Image 1 (cartoon, rainbow, N blue to C red):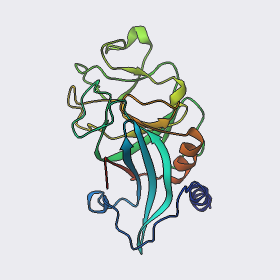
Image 2 (cartoon, rainbow, N blue to C red):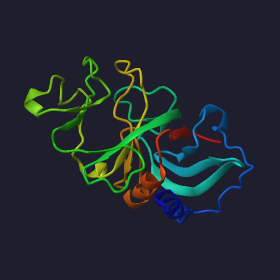
Image 3 (tube, one colour):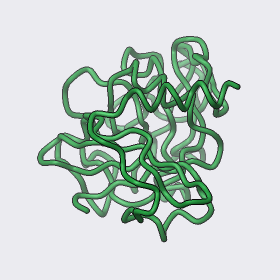
Image 4 (tube, rainbow, N blue to C red):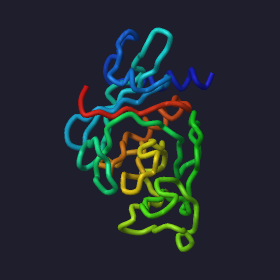
Length: 217
């Protein structure tokens, strides 16, 4: 019952008519067996739109469309690097959810974070590009500039979903890419949407979902 109600909530987000089920979106051959995809298309500068797609026996159907989104201050890039202030293009996993607020009913694993939760952006650290829990004075990685490490106990992370960018954790190839709530401005490389809309999407998303980001379709 939860899944049905969550899907209905997402349907209410649609800003434009949804696509028919026999339409094949651009990412269709790049997401493997995934049945849920958030498709982000850059619309210029740090602006983008997001559509939520679901695959059924009849093909792909957009269950929400035209959700306004913000991306990196430097737009989109096919080659992400630490500190580039651009959002990477490509197809990525959505690994799990987290936030400073209690679990709002996420369909994915959810971690409630505190001031001791960090995203390790220290390229020299063996835990680079992962969530870590430690007191600042005892963290075994750099927590301040210019490391790129982020403390996760901040307002934009009331609710967030981890994007699987740089899963090999290659030093310098980027860390801390999330789908999170927007403050209205560009991001440092994440994708940001209205928090209330994000919460509805989190209730709909389930393990195995993916995010597909492109500059044009």
